[in-house]
Amino acid sequence: MVEAAGILCPESQGKFEKISLSRRTVTRRVELIEEDIASQINKKAESFKLYSLALDESNDVKDTAQLLIFIRGINDNFEITEEFLAMESLKGTTRGEDLYNHVSAAIERRKLLWSKLANVTTDGSPNLTGRHVGLLKIIQDKVKEENPDQDVIFLHCIIHQESLCKSMLQLDHVMKPVVKLVNFIRAKGLQHRQFITFLEETDTDHRDLLYHSCARWLSLGKVFQRVWDLQDEISEFLELVGKSTEFPGLSDKNWLCDFAFAVDIFLYLNELNVKLQGKDQFVHDMCKHVQAFKSKLTLFSRQIANNSFVYFSTLAPQKDLVSCPLSQDPENAPQEVQLELIDLQSDSLLKEKFNSLKLNDFYAALNEAMFPKLRKTAQKMLTLFGSTYVCEQTFSVMNINKSRHRSRLTDQHLGAILRIATTKLTPDFDALAKREINNTVPDETVSFFAVIL
Image (cartoon, rainbow, N blue to C red; front, side):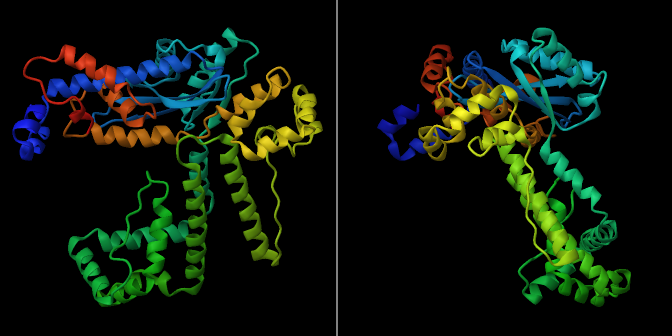
């Protein structure tokens, strides 16, 4: 129809292109695209020397527990693949054994070897990390059974740890009044509208206050910053509505000093949080951000206490070995790589390559016969997941697609949608289009690529 319209009535071709595809057509094409992407992942997995998993579990709109599994694998040429592995629906209990059965099923479907599993990163929940019956303990036993020499590195998501640090600041005497103030202004419709009108009349840069959501890591810092920016306007508004006595902190210099400190410290925490987010993050880079932040905290503390400036960092030797091999002291490196490290640091050509190539390309360029242990160590470090950010991000995609308006979406189709939404691979559209032409029923002649657009 589209091709015929282009010849007979080209001015109306756009109308034909907008014809909605049938439900069966969209469903079939989503399945075909997902199947193609999954086959590419399977093919890449065949060449993995090591791989890692990132796991996280959350409930969807129908209160079904969904376990998201992402994989990051590395081949002999140091090509790194990070993709959505599976979504496993937990219909019953969510004990460590239940989670293991689903993770094991996903691994076996992709024909992955337990003996090549290098790392599992989770959000630290008890059913995942239980010492005796948690998922990680069962995985550890399974890997040891397959390969006694393989040590699996279990990590607690760095972003979750950074978020938990906020609870150690002991700033409840600041946080509770600020949250109470925001709720006082925003909770009642009339009061909220009056406040917005007041801000418009005073011509401020902001037009409203922000709500704090415990589920969103960055929200508290943004709420604090907005209240601080609008503190004069808020004080005037409270005077107008006769509620200024309910919030004495806004006129207390000591409280305002603590509030100002909270605004600054949350600003730095949020900056760190943003640096830790995103796909394709290497653990050593994330650790550098955390270590730099620790050094900043040391600086802040010493400045406040002694008016002096001291900078220092203490990166873990194993992470230094991979990210900065030229400056690593061989005596402080693991014994099995000491001699290779000396050879590396003595080669001027390799030094030039290190400064000009990306880290994984540099290790791929190392002669395997001369540096087998260094290459193996680098492969293990580069394949680690430092956080479960990819899972958290995908839960947002899940909630958008499986909403109260689309609550009957099947788990199979939801998993297919998540794979398509998160992949960096490009489906073989030419092959899929040929399959579509062969399978299309007579009344479904709309262009295959319309569903992609």
